[in-house]
Length: 435
Image (cartoon, rainbow, N blue to C red; front, top):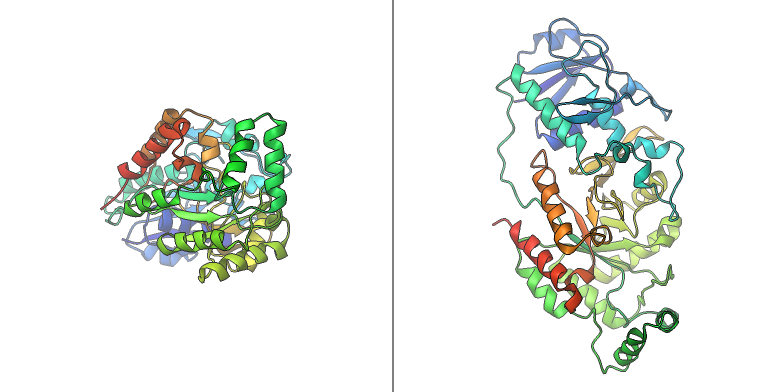
C-alpha cells in the first residue's frame, strides 16, 4: 500500500531522506505532493510534513532544515523518544516530538563532517567528534530505529499500512581487506629490506630469521594459506568479497609488487570464485591520477569493471574522496565506518546514496555502511569481539539492515595464537548462513 506525504515545498533534501527511510529502510512505496486538493482527495494512508498542521490529519512538524541550502551551523536540540536519543527536538504541534526527517538527513549526509572539526593523525574525521559518541549511541543505527518506531505510529492511524513480505537472506555481509597477501613474499625489494631491518631493530629475531627462510623457500610464507581457506569459504552460504591493495607507492611500509606474476595469479584465482575489487591506497585518496591508476590496474588484471571500492584505513574528507570515485564511475563504496571504533558512522545499517551537500544533489554512489573492522575488533578478546557482533546484529531494527565487517587475511591464519579468532570467525559465517 502506497503512502502519500504532503509538504509545501518538495526539495532535493526532502526527496532524498524520505525515499531512504520509506523505500530503502521500510520498503514502503511513497509519493509526494504539494497540492492540498490532491492530499485531501487521497483516501489511503497519508500524513503532512509542514511547519503547521492543515487540520486534524497525521502531522509531523518540519523544522525547515530540509528546505535549506548550503552548510551552516545547526542547533542540535536533543531529546528522547521511545527510548531513543533524537535530534531536532521541539514542543510544536506534531505527532512525534522531533523532526525525524531533519535528524535522519543530518546523520545520513554526514553533515557534521562538513562543519569545522579537528582531524586525527591520518586526516580522518574522528569518532570522538561525532554527536553519536557524546550521546553514547554510536553502536545503535538510530536512523533505522527512528524509521521503525515511526512506522508503528503510522500503523496506529493506518492499520492497513504493512511491510511487504520478502524472503530474508543472510543478515551479514563480511568482506576481506588484503593489504599484504603474503607476509614476506612478492613485495618490492625496498619494502622487504625495510621489513627485515625493522624486525632486527625491534629484536624480533624469529621474524627476521623466518623472513630469510621464506625467501630461500625453506619455509612457507605464514600468510600463504589460500589453498586451505578458499575451499572453506567457497562451501559457505555467505561468500565474502575481497579488496586487494594493489599499489606500488609505499605508505607506512606497505606496497605491492603489482607486476609479480605469482601475486597476479593469486588475485585472478580468487576472482574466479569471489567478488574482487580495489582497496585504494593512501596515495589514491590524495590524488585522482593515482586512484584511476590503481582502479585500472585491477580492472585489467581481473578483466571485469570495477564498480566497488574501499579506501585503505578509511576515508578522509568525504567530499574529496567520493568526488574521485564518482569521476571514475565507481558505484559502491565500503568506507563508511570507523577503523578503530565499533559503530555506525552514519547511524544506519542500510545502504544509502551519498548526498553531495556542496552541490545539493543525490549522487549515484551507494554507500554500504560498515560497523567494524578487524583492527577495532582485535582491541577486544576473540569472545568479546564476536559476542559484540552478535549483540549488534540482534539489535537491528529492520531486516533491511546488514552487518558489514571488514576482516583481513590474518583472521584465518592457522597459527596457534590465532586459533580462537579463526574458529569464532568460521562459526560466525556458519551461524548466519541462509539456505
